[in-house]
Image (tube, rainbow, N blue to C red; front, side, top):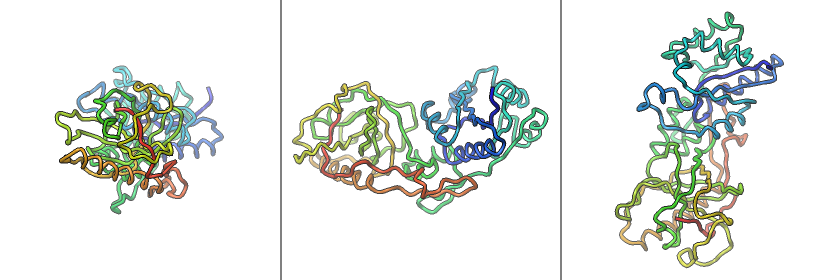
Length: 351
């Protein structure tokens, strides 16, 4: 087995701090002529086995996490299942197994790294064990991010969750280094949207949802095509007894000049009505949910929402981070732009 430089953790969200660990590992590997950088990620969260009621909401699916870590520079991402046997290992035994089984020559961690049974190990113990187990220990300083209100926060999964649950998706994108992404499956809803000219994809996901409200987003279809999307999270107060939903109204540019209400519903790219995957990236909070006095008032607001979505998606987001391995706001790593911004685009999907 080829030697490697490793980082270990839950790594949920793969935020700027996690990306800094991987980049530091890559730098060390290059300097030592080591060909592999490996990220070890616990999935599910260890609390799922220890205190299921305390498990934090998931920011990333496993596939997303692996993809983001590889994009940050990892050559391999290894899933650590939090089995009782693994969680029972004392810190030294836990690290010894990782180092032995994967030819680890260096471990890169943040200052808050904890490991082993009952999280007994810390960075001081990591550094003490390093020469005894035959690896180098490197500690990376935290990465800070400057939010849109000019406050400076430490990039962390906890901070990303807090921002999302308060509807601050643009700030969450700064902490994550990219817009928050939801992977979902289209399922049947009440099919009401298609009757008023605004059909929606009703979506099912296991990931954390942001605060109730309406958002501008980008939706990626199975074909890889990305289009703007107006995203609704939560109850629909205009309709009685409507259950909470995650639904997305896609802005598809088909060249139609007819009003939305006059357009007939049509399938998207020859896809079936339900059962296909949709990827959403949440770019901007638009407004709170509102109970409208009539369907006419609702549809008028939806027209405004769709125009705003198109406008927002045509402008690049800002991102600022501070720290030894912070993302450069000018390098495009956190910038996502909409592939089309025509406010008169045709809107079609299913509800």
